[in-house]
Length: 378
Ligand SMILES: O=C(O)CCC(=O)C(=O)O
Ligand SMILES: [Fe+2]
Image 1 (tube, rainbow, N blue to C red):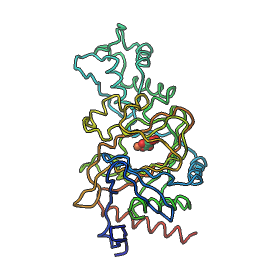
Image 2: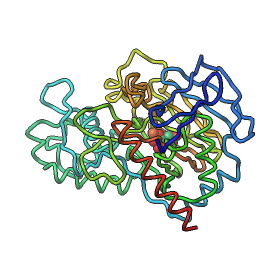
Image 3: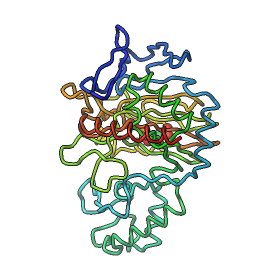
Image 4: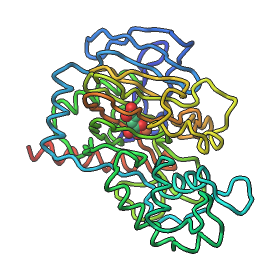
């Protein structure tokens, strides 16, 4: 076998060929549990913040210089507006007449717009839309099926698109970003960090290199409403490869989130359902809790951004049979609360995998070849 994978086990480091490759999961023990981790001689403390979902934090994982480095790389590369996968222009609008009385109240219209367009208007914005578009002919604040015909789905889309241009903070995600890829970058700091991550999460560097990295900036009002970083398992839709143009789903085994600065006020990462089993993810997605821009304080767990801190969580369990990605953990529903004062910089390091370990072994071989070629050219 041409590949070797090593893991830290109870009795020391154990290595083997490609049959050894598997995903790992840190044992969180209990909330508040702390242990010392020692990547490249840096004594750091890893603490368990939550068990359901499993979330761990390591303060000072990055030095201030490393944080500044990523911020300046991002600025140099040029940040672009973030967008979520849900693009209003492609979505079929589903009228959410939740009580089934054939009439949309303002509340139901809000749900309809939130779901269909990934846009979060206030009640006043909806009333303004009725005025601007003449949708509510009899001006009673309710939209009947007949009144709905006053505005075609296409015109509605056009109206919402303009609304978002004027009120960007009402989109589900309001931030700017750049991407970095481990198999394309020779940035020394980036390579150091990949090694450090590999050590503390006990995953081979080869698996860490399957990841991608996104540096994100939020300004005042910047936020990201609650979402999943990954998607549920599916036998019909394959895991996305980079720049995939087929219908595909994002498969991110785990999220490693770096805080690159201290935020003056706001900007916590919120886990809506941490330790809360009384609400299903589907119920949560239709509840006001998901709108972190408005209802951040209703989440179960808040993590304060602190320069250099990293938090780690697992979007999926491990499939014990294959050792590869298993069911999604729907307690991971999370997002970024609005920045009140100052700005917020983070790095998202997403450990991405494909549907099978064999496909990822193939990718690992390709990446190694590519990196060897870059090395010999240097
Ligand atoms: O900004 C945050 O704290 C969370 C960001 C996030 O969830 C994401 O970018 O996927
Ligand atoms: Fe996220």
